[in-house]
Amino acid sequence: MEHFTEALGWYVVFLFSTTLHEAAHAWAAQKGGDLTAYHGGQVSLDPLPHIKREPLGMVVLPLLFSLMLRWPFGFASAPYDPVWARNYPRRAALMALAGPAANFLLVIFAALIIRVGLSSGGFVPPDFLSLTEITVGAEEGFWASGALLVSMIFSLNLILGIFNLLPIPPYEWCGNEEATAPSLMPRSLRAVKYCPRRMVDLPLQPLRVCSSPTREFARGLC
Image (cartoon, rainbow, N blue to C red; front, side, top):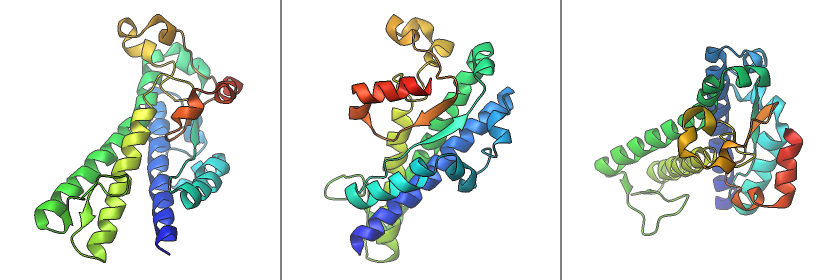
C-alpha cells in the first residue's frame, strides 16, 4: 500500500509539473507571436489538452514507471511554428526557457515550504537525502505526507529543469543556445538546430540520450 501511495504521489507531481512546464512554453510562444500551441488549447493549467496531445507520455508511461521503478518517466510536447522560430530566434529561446523556468519556480516554492516546515517544527532534516526525503515529517500523518509531497515536487522539478537546459537532442534547449550566448558555446553545440515540429521533454533520461536509438528517435522528430 505504501508503494502504491508513493507511486501515485509521483504521478500526481509529474502531471502537475509537466502541465505547468508545457503551459509555460505555450504562453511564452503566444506572447512572442506564435499562436500554434494557443490554438491547441495548451495555454492552460488544465492537464487534459496536454494529455490528449501525448497520452502515452503523460499517462501510460509515467504511471507504469512510477509503479515499477518509483520514478515517473514520461514525456510531453508543445507545438510551435518552425518558421516563426527561425525568424525570431530570441523569442524562440525565451519560449524554450519558459518551461525550465516554471520548474525552477516550483523548486523555489517547495524550498520555501520546506523552510517554513522546518521553522515550525513540522518538518525535520532526514538522516539521508533522497528524492523522496529532502525533508521528513516530525510526526506521522499530515506532516509526513506533506514532507513526502514537497520532497517530490522539489526533486522532480529540479531534475526536469536542469535536464531541459542541456543542449543535447531531444531536450528542448538544443538549438536555442545560439540565440542567447553564441560566443560561450562550442561550435559543435551551436550547430544544433531546432526540431521543426515540436519540443519534447524527457525527465531524467541521460543514458538513452547518449544511445544510438535515442539519437535516431530525435532525428525522426526533426
